Every structure is written in structure tokens, then in C-alpha cells.
Image (cartoon, rainbow, N blue to C red; front, side, top):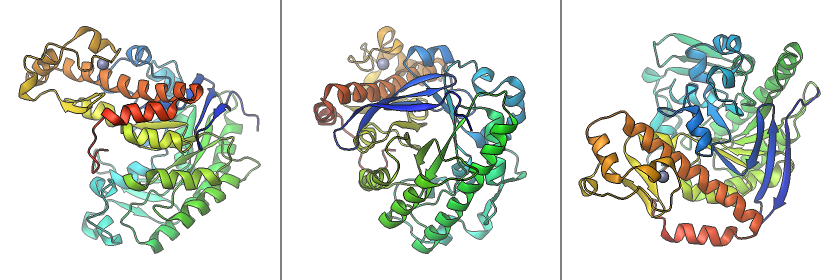
Length: 412
Ligand SMILES: [Zn+2]
């Protein structure tokens, strides 16, 4: 199968596993490492695509699960694909829907969160009476979080949905476990994910061949294995060398709940095993301190809903850490959110104005704060890229983390 328009080139390596490169897709080239803002339902909430472009976004990610439920993947196909449908001319990514069917579907979002101190038992993950998603060896049956209707995702259906949505990069359908599942369960989930990965490659090949008129879509395999070194390495070796229907994965995602303290170690295990010349994506991680850890351990791209989600609750990034602009002290703070920031919001508005908008429940609050937070994170990863090229990554990290205060627990 011809790889029409997808390639990855590494221009610079080190320190450690870090690298800077570029990824070419049918909708444009991305410089890596880079941060991918999330537009869950084919929109970064409250911000125009042109504005996302202006603030430096090279690529956007949408969620297959959400678009499958609404408006339906066939609608996006008919519209000419995700990029055209949402008027974002650049590259796009979809996740497989696996994480959402198991988190939103099951209704145990909090258990998939990063704090593992509270629970550790399979039955906590899904109490029978609350269980809205059921995993079997063939796929996942789940209840829509919108109207309670029943649906089923299999690897084949996930591939069909993602081909219809038409993003430049897609992910294989995997079973996303939590840190609270037992090791025994992690092993069986990993076996399922491996079998599903082969089925994704087969279906991807079939769809690519039968939809020759469409731009090539790259497929990334997803590495699970929770916090276990042997399982993570095994999964990376397995998917890294996997071939079926004469094709292999174009890149890889590192998935699953990841304890903040073990993040770098786990990414390191995985990236030591995966083929060096293929792109690595870290799924759902976006806190500044974690982005440094990801980059130095060989991650090329990140996605996270965090910058826009917290922006809408008036939580804003600065070089010194996050603060809540709705709080009383900012009522008369006639200064930008961050005087080091080059975004549209910081160039034109004050903390006092943002404070007023949030207090008054004005919708412009979401737009202006999202522009700032997305710019802050996109720019930070761009700065990391430049620092890798200049050989100053360690200095940037020291300088940034020296002044940036973060909450060690729950800062995701
Ligand atoms: Zn700003």
C-alpha cells in the first residue's frame, strides 16, 4: 500500500530520547515536538479555527466517539472529511473512541483519573449496577452518554468510523485500562488490545484500498500496559513489529492512565522498544511539567483537552503557575494575564477585564481565556523544539520549572 503523503523525519536527536522532526500529512506538515489542541466535537470550544491557526496550532484532534454519536461519521464523510467540515485547512487527528466508550460510557471518569491512591480493584472500575459499557473479546458494547441508546464498537467499526471522519492520523481501537485494574486484568486487556490491533490493520488496509479517492490516513497503534514494565515493553515490542495484510503501524500512541511520578519512566520503557524512526504520541497529557518529561523521553506529539477546559473555568496559565482570574484580587488588575505571553488576549486585554467577563458570565470570557491557555501550551512545546535544536533543552527546563509552581497531585 502506497503511503500517500504521510512521512516522518527526524532532524535532530538528544538529549536522551528527545528528538525534533517533522511529520508530513495530506493536509500539511507539522514540526515536532508539538502540542495538539483538542476540538472534541470538531470545534475547539469558543474559538474560531482561524484563531487557532493564528495562535500557532499546527494540527487539531477530535474525538471519534463524540462525532460518531453526533452528527454521525457518515455526515463528516459526506461533507468531505473532518478538516473540510470544520473549516480547519490543516492536519487533523482522531482518537479511536476506546477511551471514551470506557470512560464516558462506563461513567467512571474519575476512576480513570491519575490519582491511584484511593482504589485498586477491578470491581471499583465498574460496579455491576452502574456499568454502562461491557468489554468482550470482540469489542465494547456501551450506552450513549447523550440519550442512553446502546452501541457497539469493534476494531472494524472504529476503523470504519475513523475512515469516514477522515482525519490525517487515526488510532487503533484499544482497551484503555485504569491503574486500579488488577495485573491479571491488565494482562488479558493487553492480549485483547493486541488482537484488536491486528484487526485494525486488516480493516484499515481494506478501507484504504476501497476508498482510493480519499487522502491517505495514517494509523497509529496504541501501547497499553499500565504501570508494569514487562507489560509495557511487551506491548511496545508486539505493536512495534506488528504486520498484517502487508502493512504496519505508521506511528504509535502511548495510552492508559499514567501516574504522574512514573510518567517519564513508563514513556522511556515504551520508546526504548518502539521503532525509532516512527512518530510517538502521548495521549491525553498536557500539564506543562509533564510535557517536559514527555519530550525528554522521546514523545513527538501531545494532545490534551486541559488548556481549553480549565480556561472555561477561569483558570489561566502564567510562567509562575496557574491562577484563577475570577478571584477577588484581580478585580482591579489592569495588567495582562502573563506579561511574557504574545497571544491576542494578552496583547489587548487585562486580568481585570477577564475577571469582569467571568463574573458577569459573558461568553467572551471563554474565547479570550482559551486563546491564552492554548497559546501558552502550544508555544511552550514550540520552545522545547527550538531548545532541542539549539542544544539548550536542559536550560529551558530548569528556567521554566524553576519559576512554574504546580500541584503534584491532580494537576492534570
Ligand atoms: Zn496570553
